[in-house]
Image 1: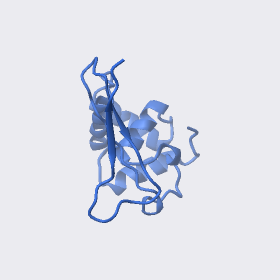
Image 2: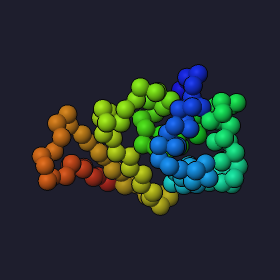
Image 3: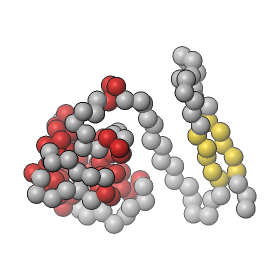
Image 4: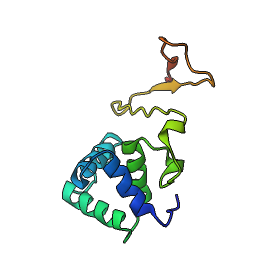
Length: 132
């Protein structure tokens, strides 16, 4: 992921549009990290200090934090930092995080079609168990 020259302003705009303080965004980024299995996150105050530096443009977030931003803000990774990105005109995406106990061999397959499901119906999910 490459950073546009005005990434700091874009990051701040994304946070302010949601009326989040830096501490609130830091808590949400940490929560996202924990859900994805990253237990090596700094304290909230340290992440908030990094957010301050990222928004000022003195440094840019690492790929790790960019992915946490995307998950937290609901932004597709390929649109991170894109000022032209408008969620109202983007294809809806669902991010599903599933935590299974270690050693579990159950897999979940999600399938999609080009046409949305009929109103009042849910998308189809396929589930299978792989016993190797």
